[in-house]
Image (cartoon, rainbow, N blue to C red; front, side):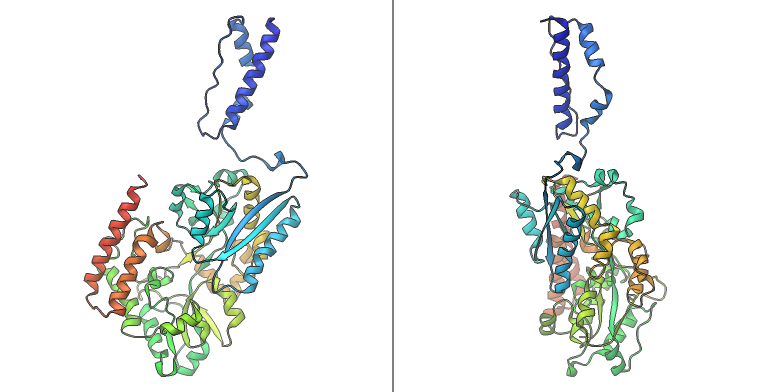
Length: 478
């Protein structure tokens, strides 16, 4: 074998080795080992290695494969899973298909396969499918951000960087906050919603009660609820959420009671829920049902679900923009909204905001195409298409649609301008396993069974919840 042929052979071997290195899924490049061939002088080997372009060596860092690698006529199918809740309307369901068809019209070589499931046990359905290798490419849910430690979610940070997305300018603060864990984006926001108080103007007028105004306090709220309640007429002042454990989880009251029940990182309830301020906050909300009896009975709640305000027999309900489609479609009375109450005259009202999040499966076989769909879904074009159902996470769309000046949406807009914080129940992936049972037990013992030593009940349940959190986080090793 002459020297020239040896050189060509070596060049080919090195090129193949470098391509294999570039394609490895490991984040750490594997060194290329060149076995020494006796017939080839060292000087020749050095010259061959010197001829390998530096650009090729840089390829070892994994990056999303460009769509251009697909054949021009190849059709890619992206599976998209979503949920249906009791408050959803036919228009809500149709919106998913509307978005899918709009995207397919724009990108003919991509098909979006939409599947909608009941919201109950949806998370279990997704995780079971992912474990079996049959999960969706993308889906949306409301997991705490530290769910990323479970290993199912694709890190979208490099995709966002490649798409030159400035997240802080593109989405509301809560949208970004709900998608980031440990400095990386493991999701992108579907929408952005704050909490406000909806009130039945007809009931207020009939009872001779003044409408609530921005700047009111939780004591104003309680007095108003009592004034509106008339059990003989089957009429109640508030919805069941504020008069239950939902007061501390799914409502603005969780921030405006003078206490936090969970630490910012979600890992601590001890020193928060069982603090004097925490116990007082719990007592206020529980007493709305146990003492004041201004919340509707279980039968009414079962009939109308979480949006019992639709009954026309409830004066006030804490709502988000997720309830607006049903309210606009089904209410037969006059209603309006107002900012939630603050703790007292000395404190500012704190906004409760939230966002559903789109996720991309780490096991997806079409990650780049799925990302491009997510990029579009969370951008202005899709935002305007979904605006009849969801309030998009993009301030630019709100402003283009002139929502800040709308009598209803303008109230929501003002809430979204306030500093964002993560809801108590969305701070830990173990909240539902550890903290929710504790809150349910507190409710059951204090409200249902009539035990009145709330201090002792809360301290006992807090200790149990903390032990549960500690054990679960110990398994993560961080």
